Length: 541
Ligand code: G1P
Ligand code: ZN
Image 1 (cartoon, rainbow, N blue to C red):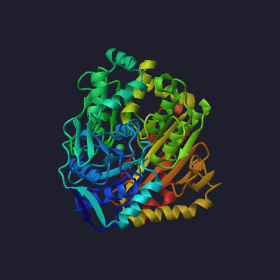
Image 2: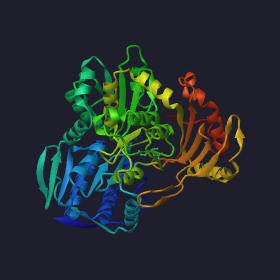
Image 3: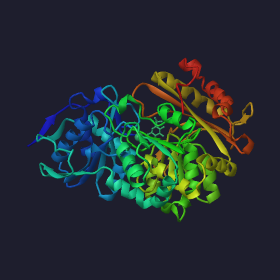
Image 4: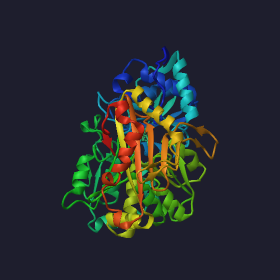
């Protein structure tokens, strides 16, 4: 039996850059999840279509999976492909959407935000290209959430997703698949698994920290079972609803135990971590954390070494706040480098049009044209394949890269949970200041450009305005300010600092030391202390 349930709209269901992300307690309100899902099905016509469904295993994942299956059946979907246990990493979901010709995908995740009853939950909609739904679609979903008066749901019990195979819910087929199998096969088609296995057999030691999130089963299957890394190379590999109480964010703070292991005497040769839903990556060399902006540049520079890119790259792209290290590589390769607003969805059109092969963000996101999401484990395998091809320590490869291209020292300073009005006042003040800056000198830095970044999509011509304030000091340095679009509590101000160093003798210094003056300038220009009371950032990534 299918029921039509009367409901009233919730005022706060605007999907941000990464879907609808809220506290679990918000999602637990009666009809809250149902309303949002119905708004999706009112926007994307799923009748007779296939949908992909899965999540990162966080608290509420199981409940959400059941509700969505019953609503998909009631809204006329022909088939839902769901990961066993309701699990799918974000990149694996993206791959399934593409390979199975699905109309859309629904991913249950709040990415790297904490999980558990007190944590966050989220719902993300992906389109048929496998990528995050573009703004016109998420805007339409938002409009529907404001006008909703009913939702449709099956009264039957949701199918058991713990067992592989097909079953029926109303007229709809529920197909429970192994969440890892297709993804692992895709990775084998992109990289030289024989070569990586040989590296691992040679005694090269790795440590992959799954942070009790979704990549555990993927990493165990690929790194340990298929590539032969010794058991125990994957740590915290069992997904838990509360991520073991951790914040599954692969940065040096939250992945502290990985950093400790990689900075200790006798550290493994290579360390890596991923986040809640498996789309982010952190790469750590013994004694050195690889900046994500460096990582994407280095992958691009070495891309020809791996089978997937043996014929070279069509182009590359980075989000605006990501350092300009990638631009230098692109210039040398003679390929275009696009600068897009923050958020993976802006890469989608460029990837679909074949204009770029590899792209990345400073926020630990790296990816390519094999799916339409950033991909944590893919980045790890890409690095391992390069290391297997070059057979040099990762630290040497990094230093060689800097000698060739120069080093972009980089830091992101986050001021978290600010009252929204304070954060707005910082941005407003800066906006007012920008026109007066060009030509001004601050110590060694002279402003060459100060503006608010906007982006015209070269494929479909859409314009995205208000994408961050940037102050350029020629090629030498840059400060960028923007407000986070993914937080669930208050406002987060992000300040991105970068400084280019071409002199090899000055390429092995501590970023915080090199960036100290720029950091001071970033605070004084924005009057951060005056407007927020904060002396220093909460997190430096
Ligand atoms: C953050 C990152 C951004 C990333 C997004 C989704 O967004 O900065 O690069 O695309 O998460 O993973 P923000 O909170 O800055 O809006
Ligand atoms: Zn994520």
